[in-house]
Image (cartoon, rainbow, N blue to C red; front, side, top):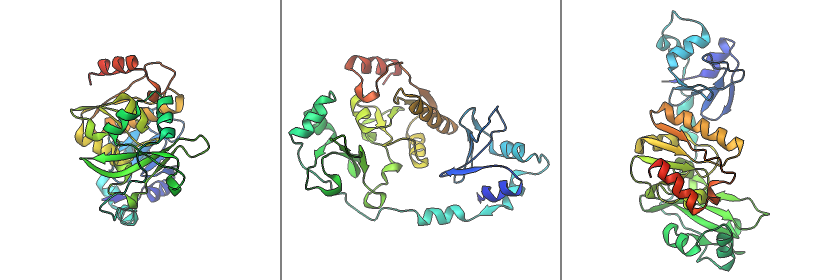
Length: 291
């Protein structure tokens, strides 16, 4: 059963924010929340506060509405809806059986970009199958093409601009991918075992190596979170040191913790992002984590 929380909260005079995609956000009744930090997932029916963590949904709803003498099922049956079904049906989905990568072998300009960032171009090409594009590649021109490979198959890709006056990252559209790139993580095939490190960008993951996957952008989708919970028991978030990135890591950590994963936010107090870590710093991180 899916619940129309907008109608529910409107009827009971509860202020809410519906700008969070799959989440309806309201003031948390469990902590000193002065904003709308409690999120209720409209698809999976669970509650999580970005400040104080996950909570039992039935108890939370009762506390918000202040109606202790009604069961959750009795109340929510009155507000059931087909909205989520329509939303999923109308969502863009893949119609392709094969992803054609733009580009060709890395040229000198692509290699120079990677070297300036402290990478070995030959190693990255061999391990991650990177390609390079030029002026004739349309939307993908002057980029390093990063295949997103899952179970040995290219399911989508992302392009990283090599010039500063371009959008840094461009990702293949969901309907042109075998798997929506926001439903998967980069480098999962190289992440065996029950522990995993997650970063935001693919070059962060490439810097740290095996055992590390990238979310391919800020934030995580419901599908990415559920995929991690199905494959791993412990997740370490290694994000940029700046304040907003650390807040994103905490938010993601709360979502993962709801699904019974052990989650750790790794803050080594270095001032540079994961993509700029030195070899010695990487050794320290992996030794501490045990990957």
